[in-house]
Image 1 (cartoon, one colour):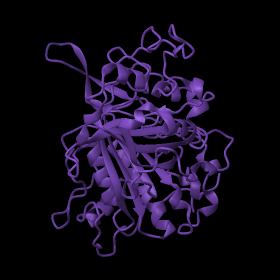
Image 2: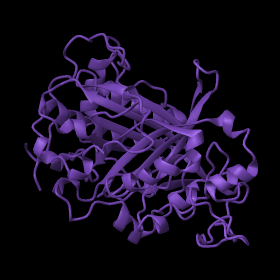
Image 3: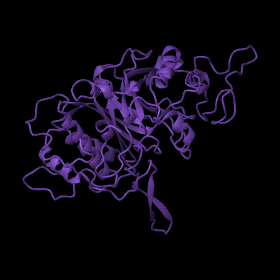
Image 4: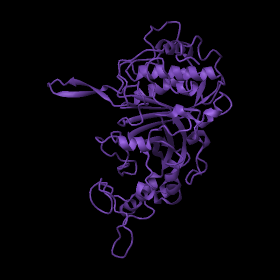
Length: 445
């Protein structure tokens, strides 16, 4: 394939729509294809970068300086995809898709169209600058016409199932992307909430902005791919920057106190970004995304005694400091015991089993969100929990190691269940207009 891709000369959905229970949106495809093509190759005003938000300042009526969050942008073009080490935004929409086309060219065009759309969306633009035509559906669905980008980031990943015989990519799958096999705690994973050929992670500080991004990118995939499953998230459940406070999960505890921060270059290099030692050069500078939809048994948790809740976590609930004393960020004294020799931090506590000290130094970058799907119609209980997202260099050597221990003996397992998720390879960033997601996968480097 050539080093640059021209806009698609035909719509991605030239065939009539097929009934599908998983089809997300069923109209406006022809207009959208034209809009996506019009946006292809547009260079946004944002500079190449590695994911730092750029807040646009404004002034209040009283004359004081403030920050207009709606106008804040995160550079899209850069060596690495934004949305991994970017300071975590407040809202998430995650989507997993399956390819319906088996034409490799359709896959490449979709990844190119998504790159063009992501460049526009993250700079506050809609699908196309071309005027709509009265006889066609609008290019853009329109729900953010009066909004701003709100620090939107769009991160795209490729699943292991994409590397079968359909697209001639079987020899290009990284070993790190191979299925993780059966891990303790995965027994109740639901197939309809698991896996997918492609994924999109959209994060921003506004719920409608992330919904718009996913809605229109899924819309642009019509005829090439269909939505497999999706998840909305709120109230970030991790801190990815040194300046961010540690948020709380739906159990009311601070979550991710010792998470890797974006400004810790050494840690991100050692644990997050794929380096030169990889079996697939196209993944250099990328990262691997592991997602888990973790249902929380909130009603049961709410009946548990505070002392038991704190024993399960290994931290106090209000302050977040370890039970061995100090403040939230005080190193945990795992070897500390009480007067009768009982460890202060229970051997099966969450904080101990997840700690680098107890796992040979293994670390991951957490980027999770709380979620609620309302009420479970079968049980009447809240359908809510944690949409766990983690980035790492190799899920087999990182996530799998941690989850094997947590899934086996974590005291918290009484109150949680892993019901969905997957693993995807997130390639390096889109360098400039004309580049696209995973381009080097198709053009050996």
